[in-house]
Image (cartoon, rainbow over all chains, first blue to last red):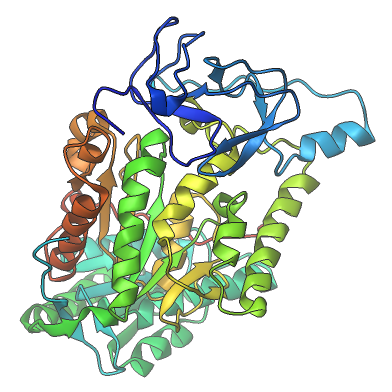
Length: 115
Length: 393
């Protein structure tokens, strides 16, 4: 990591990097982040894709899978709950297989702070 | 690392051979009904006096009743405790004598007062406070002695995690755990739901297949329980705050969280909630992720001090063990400075290396174990919650 680089790639082989500051679309990342150009606004602490991740493929951080892409993720895209799904503890999927009518999700509480 | 301190601290050597880092008078209610009286008695001799207010002790079925007994008894025998007053009501399930015996077996003075036998709460409180003053005066005179860090069991914990936890505070804490184990000490990691997704890394550090299998069995059980509810654990794991902080899945949270158990320390043991930690190296304890229940269990297992990493900031303390808060988030270090002991955010903007941050944290652990007050102690955060698995009847 260099001070000028706004992202950190934790392990070689990761296909996402973590933004150390908020990134605007069009921002070019350094060579160690694959010279990717940012496509979406990335909040500080969130992840940006370093490579194309096809739907169903593993998202890799810390050198391990942190879940699977639920849609095609392009280099420079914001990678978060809207396009990545956990593969663990998914009782909802098991329940949906048993009974296809899925219940609505509760709204996520805000509790008055920005992360 | 430069200028390594001598690996000793100033602690309290107990008759049973264990070493404490605090010398508390513990006022233990057997049951929720004597909890308020216990808090009033402890408050009269604070901060040396500390209570274990809880909501259990009656109406509990087999395994939960046993867990309540074992956890309270573990605190009575804990090396950070110098003497014990058991506050009973008189008609409850928890056996006061059992708790007093646990303290006496560890060489501590222990007394039982029952509210119903003492003639009501006013008389019981007055009598207990008089006794507490006498015991506290004795404990205050006890000197600290030089003890080797190999006597320490350090609980490693994270809460209110964000992206900085996996990048700075957890790896810094992991280096401290590795170093402590190198010096002959031990570390304990709880929150097994937050190992889900990183269990392959810990299992690879088990010295034999049996230990690895016991780890995987505990994690499979937690995952099966979540699955059986038919829910997506997302929203609970990671929490809403974790998600706003940039953590997307439990796997990502776990991979960051597991760093705090060290990078190379062998996985020595896997133990049930609040069970005595007996092995050097890293022990995984079967606790929930809920901060207070988790810390309560690990201290019950014998951890004398806790290092708690946080991204967003949290007040959590413990009645008998110091809880050291560290953050890798520069904003939290300022906005929650009342609650934070150590800022390691320099790791993220190259003001310091992880090794330098770990060296500062190690020094802080030694200082706190020798008596330095933590933020949570200064602010009297002494949360205590015994895990339960079954309904109250």
